[in-house]
Image 1 (cartoon, rainbow, N blue to C red):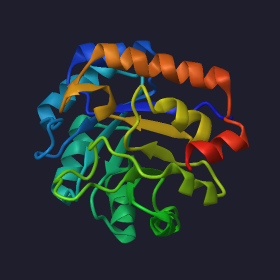
Image 2: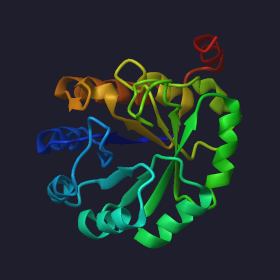
Image 3: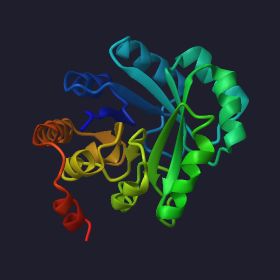
Image 4: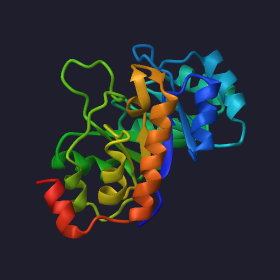
Length: 229
């Protein structure tokens, strides 16, 4: 079983950045999408990016951003990764990669097995793939909704080369690690006490449960089937 890297997304303060990095987080995410309670301005991201320094990868999450915004983010914030969490086409993903020079991660909304076909459409043009639960009806946020999809459908995939997101928290991270074993985990609302407000206690609980899951190893096959029955 591989040891997934962990990205904590929607960070807004230096203190919470220090907390997640102290626990072994290898990637931090800043959200630039005004409807989100985790939204940060370009100036705020510049400040927090400087605070991270070279201690972790920095990802900026965008939703259907235009060229002007992407250029501004690339030159001023200088993220390592641009996360595209909107309705970007495969052609648009390729354009963003050429435009920014950053690693590009494309989020794919998943509700059922048919949605997994999108992976092959984006894999040739995206450096990384993120599988997130499709937003519930009525939500204006494409991610960070605290919901998950049926992870058992991922058994059909031949590779674990994806980042898993949606509904990962201190109670579910064990299943994410031991049942799914993805290349990466993306956590946002699962370590918040209110929308957009991270909680140090929840962060520590998440990482404690993560380390325990790594130590325990993969779930036996019979337990995998039972847990998703």
